[in-house]
Image (tube, rainbow, N blue to C red; front, top):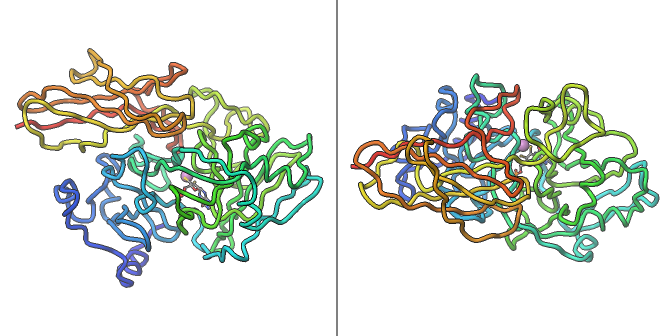
Length: 409
Ligand SMILES: Nc1nc2c(c(=O)[nH]1)N[C@H]1C(S)=C(S)[C@@H](COP(=O)(O)O)O[C@H]1N2
Ligand SMILES: [Mo]
């Protein structure tokens, strides 16, 4: 939990930057510490959230600093690739060691591995390299917009980002350890640990079939650079299409398992009620009669050119943003400026692959006064966003269509 002391601690080291809104006039419109926050997050968030600058990062919205949880403001999503220094940071555990890439090792084993091995960063780089552009989105992105509000980090729109990841295929890494047919899951552990012993270690698993897909990688580069420390250096797991929880940072252990991975972070957390979401990817070995681990990202979109309530000029106006889904690809983005009665296709921008942000833009004529703008993305399966929140106790998978007002004068 965040405390005043944590925040002061950060301020004391000079890490908090008073954000004057020089680059993003939108911030200047918002009040004080709440600058950059998404409209609709619980009121209390404004009392502790602040713009803060981590080493190597541009200002992000600090929601907690131990463990560090920092989201990207809306303005950082105006390009389909999120630069490393604007990428959000999410941790469950506060003890995050800096790892020397020269001595870094990943233990690859498990009861369903015939020949356990330890691999170095050089061993990883010696495997054939693959690149994939993929959205890393926290399961709880937009949790702060849940109604009623639910417990957890009260994210607005910015617990996500899209990058080009480079690394070795996880299946090539698993082959080194002689993964056996009995493997049903592959689990990951990272170098970070709890400060208080009571917090369970963060261990995650994915089904073996997902682990063996060509796009599931052990990445050591992000947008052509070594991974930033707080985004998982020296290497992390990338599970394109699936929510960020499986994307283990600072990965130190990879285990092929013949039995389901237990522990708090699999058995209790990151679960969604069965049957509520239009999900295709099943994680059968972890399902119960009532719930299942979260899997693929649901289809979604965001207006990034304007914030809700922004002032614009009457007449020709372009709104734009991003759309994304769990890897089926975006088929269409539609915009309504009449409260949802009629919808018109937006122009789609560059296609960086099925797991990437797909830019879109829409031209219309803003009438004097209030202009409502709604956006709905549809993927290649025909799945669209929801107009009503699909409530669930952890606030996952919020893909409610945005409905913003632009004030033309
Ligand atoms: N080692 C480690 N890896 C982790 C986590 C963590 O707490 N520890 N959090 C996961 C979650 S829930 C998310 S959403 C993503 C966030 O990735 P990012 O911090 O690079 O943005 O990292 C994942 N990998
Ligand atoms: Mo997450």
